[in-house]
Image 1 (tube, one colour):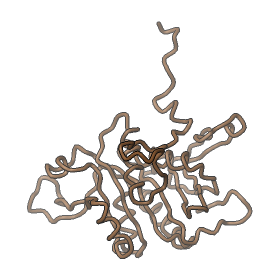
Image 2 (cartoon, rainbow, N blue to C red):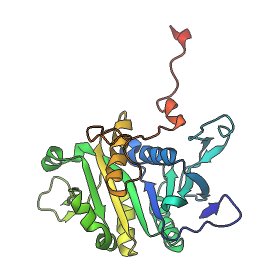
Image 3 (tube, helix red, strand yellow):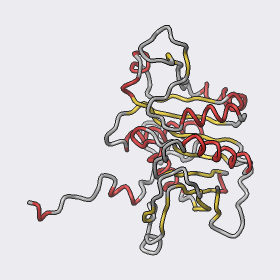
Image 4 (cartoon, rainbow, N blue to C red):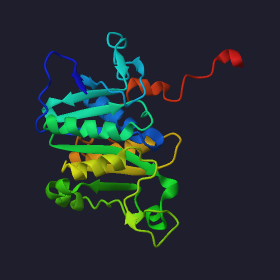
Length: 264
């Protein structure tokens, strides 16, 4: 599944894998763009898979004319060895009935690569929130049992809220309770598969609506940064809340090009 850019397969032992779920508002993917661009992560390979719709495009993280002609595809892997971080970016949707096989193959690769843990950035429909969720923070986390042992104390110290269980059949209050993530794409499948395979995984998500989801992506990476401290604030001033996230060059066309002046 994984094809390295170089001649040898990079050693990812002990690395933390960051990845998005293709979910409502594409918030996880936008958040991954911010992380890869800000940390200037290097591309180390890609996933050769029939589970995703094929696509090809220009380098989304181009910084100069020299690297603007590089091509990108639907599933690429980036790394930052100095921080023991590896990032998977997904850029297309899943082919029908191929989402679960992709999750199984991905987690098999995680195990064979000896990655220490996986952190999934995702989102869920805010329109499905209950009253309690609407009155509280829009961020939630979810940990697999094997992940809880090492990070639960740290997570609790951040006063984060765990994803609540809700009726498996909506609008039926007497229905059995379970974890539901409407609009979360493969998030729940990844979580269930990781639980059964005893993989350390954390899900970080935000309740959102479709639209301009850049603020949601900035909020989600800020939420992740509270835990991992990927980047530090620009200033020591406690009132300065803005973090120096670097917007990738591809975001200039996030909503398409401008209207041709000839129309007017």
